[in-house]
Length: 410
Ligand code: GLU
Image 1 (cartoon, rainbow, N blue to C red):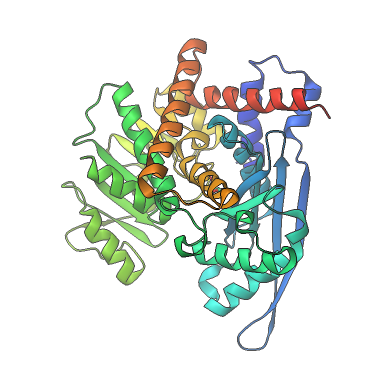
Image 2: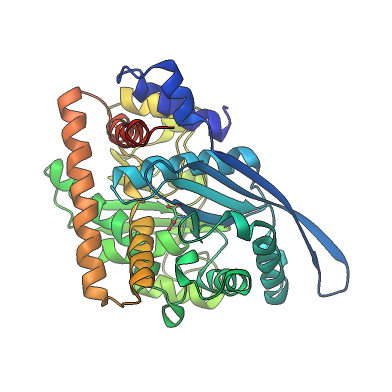
């Protein structure tokens, strides 16, 4: 299997092949501006020293300050973070918000850290990179393994060096310069575009069956919004296993169960299901909302859904993607499907810069507008050029970044 960076480069190449971009321009657009790798050494609660490796990959700033999440996960490495940074560049361009792309991460298993250790790891990481990030340089946000509390520590630590600066990070707690609706934003966008996709296919959302891999921030909010619109979530898995019932899961009750036990397994009135079984479920819509590289050449033949909505970043390998296209399974790509999070991050940053607060209703309205207009644009390109939605999204994103690069000059 190709590495994550090879995968996203391959998607890039598939698109630029149709654009007539010169080889020099391709190289410029694909080469990251800066790759940061730092030591994150902290004292553990028992007095021992623990050393982790932290990354911040700054891919492109042609359209504005670089933007992207911070992932704390034991599988984080330079290749993956760079791949995700590249995806952020296309993602911000596709939804047309004034940012470039970056991503960060620390190779650490957060489940093995105490609250205090997590705080020390976060602050130490900021100590190492604070000069290279900032509200007009590069703005971190939550991703897998991080949350609003971690963002609050980042803001606080950054401010020790640079003074009051809430716009230096997004995804903060609402009580501490965060935006209403940021937490739900990615899931809301995923649900919104799932419904838009069904409508394009003239399918009724009510009763449409869904299998969902991942029940963290993105998966759980997507499930709530989809259930609200009458879709039937028949299977859900997380890192520990999963549950299924043909009647559709009661999502509010499942959220309560997860809040209580930390897992979806053992949820009442449902049978258990593995992650592999979930990917092979007989459903209308499959939503991977967890790790990358889960739909691969090895398991793609098992997929039985007609529509895949990529809520996770980079869930499908290029080999699998080709097979899905041949089988005429519709894939709504990550760079569009999960762009709701960074879009509301943008609203948070705007509010912080203006020292002005929006109400939830305004956040939702503006989010829906941006997501649906990007969706329509991508759909239009796909139809006009007879390409997949992924290639269409890349054509749109790369085109915008390319034009900004040329207009700005070197
Ligand atoms: N981590 C999210 C993503 O992959 C959000 C990034 C952000 O808000 O900057 O899009």
